[in-house]
Length: 215
Image (tube, rainbow, N blue to C red; front, side, top):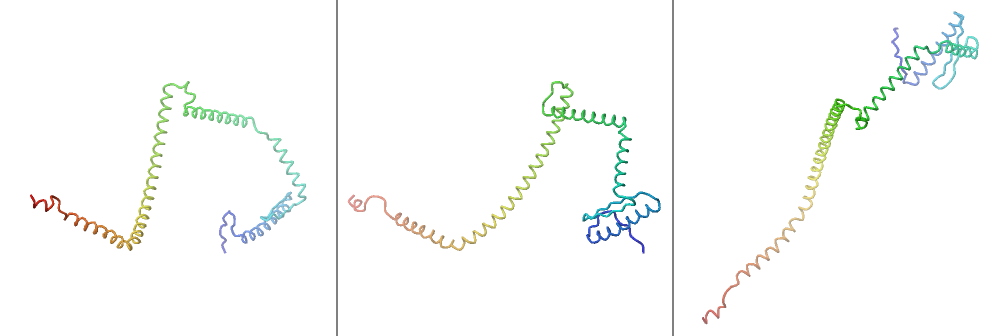
């Protein structure tokens, strides 16, 4: 049976992860033991499980092996200090970074209109052009934001108009049931007014009839 290639990443399933840990821990301890016996090497192996349980192997004494390792590390650092060439490179890099930071601070002050006394005409023109380009970019972005806001307001207006139309239709249906009585009440006074106006227009305007006969 051909074994598939195992991807080097964390196993998500907790059960599979624990089984794999147990198998590979035992294999690692076995290889450490074989290395110490076959090659007469001083081997110390420390393993902490995901739950914090300690597993270790030492061919002689774990404490003595750790002390030997610490002593070897200290001696190695003492015998190999940073070289003069490395220190010079670090100094040059630090100086270059400080100079760049200073240039950026100066450019920032000029953009704010400060420290322009030492600028030449060419530098002032370049600064002006840069500011104009910046203003153009900012205005373009502002117009874009305005258009987006207008589109959102238009969409909101459409939604409000639709809601208003729905409410108007609903209100019309509610008021339509009592509209007939309101119209009848409105017609009655108008009819009375028309009758009164008819009676009043029939009155004779002029000399009395008896006075007309005497003349």
